[in-house]
Length: 495
Ligand SMILES: *Cc1c(COP(=O)(O)O)cnc(C)c1O
Image: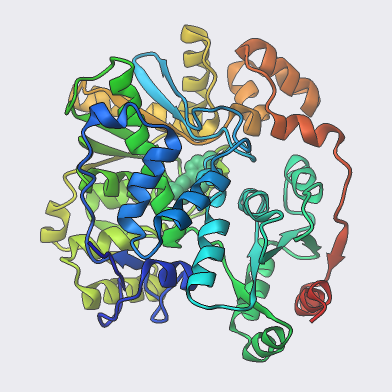
């Protein structure tokens, strides 16, 4: 069965999966959604005997129907290889009655690696399939983490180059060190003398600059983005929920067909939407528990039906969830609006004009699969400490938000369904906040001293991603003014 993709705001024109991956966003500003969610239809007994890569093929081939078997398998083989520090790719760890799905064993020890390790291959394959002759240039502005994960994914992928802009004085020392030590003949990192918004605005301007596009095209290049709304990032994220279910079955934790819950620490709503798609493919998922930090726009949305970004932006210890506009929520809105593009467009226009919109009672009635709640900073720290003291297992701050919301869910509902918690970052990525939560006595330690201490108390080896930056040489030291961004891009590309 062929699956095509249409825009959440569009007039009904459909594109193929590879075209949707190449375009990223639809021309009308909407997000691409599959015309239909395919059925998984594989017995769990069979899934349990498959590797991560084999399950990835079964799931992804049902969505990316214009990819040949060879094309898709080649993408999967190149993505989920020794860049991951475990053969399982995503191990499941049981602690205090919950199942932690460790999505952080890739190159940058956080869950963005799950999608960004395969996106470059999906993108170059899509380019080939659509006779795109130009080399793809990924332009990204980053506030720290996504830029590094994107570079790690695109490094030395033939037919691509990646240029990352970051605010020279606006990222943490560890984040900066991770970026400026990035290897790969096609990676470029440029600091700018401005903040993250300046970097992002500068990148957007280049994307919209028709003259620049023509100059680049003459030199054999075209821009693309590695944005989290690309279906090439969404589809690979469905895989690990299927894998988690198969693993629980294989380990004797659940019976065939038994329902599970999933708890996801949420920012842009991409990860939890992937779980929702997995459920709609037929995976036995009961509740989707959406966990927010103090930027609790989504909790308010689920409890009132009103989405309102007009509020203070709070800096928390789970920075990857400090988000007031969850872009991927548009795909859920479209669905509960009965796939009504006009209605969706209206609401999204209200969001950009007034910063808020309200869904109808009929739409709210379709959110029964979801439960939303949030964790305060204090609660987040407390659960890291408690879980460590009770079980020895150390989780990062984002995962802790989810663990805390799961506790609230259990207290509120008395539901004892087995629950998978998406563990989105290694504790080593947020060592200082994690160690501070466990004991304030660690506050005085230096960064790398603290990392060794975490390794000791958690009895977990320091991940390679961290070990490498201790000694890695700085390979990128370019810093430019905001106004010089287009010039440096042309210079780096010899265009
Ligand atoms: C990006 C990110 C999240 C949020 O995921 P979304 O798909 O944006 O909801 C949570 N935790 C970590 C560590 C992340 O990097």
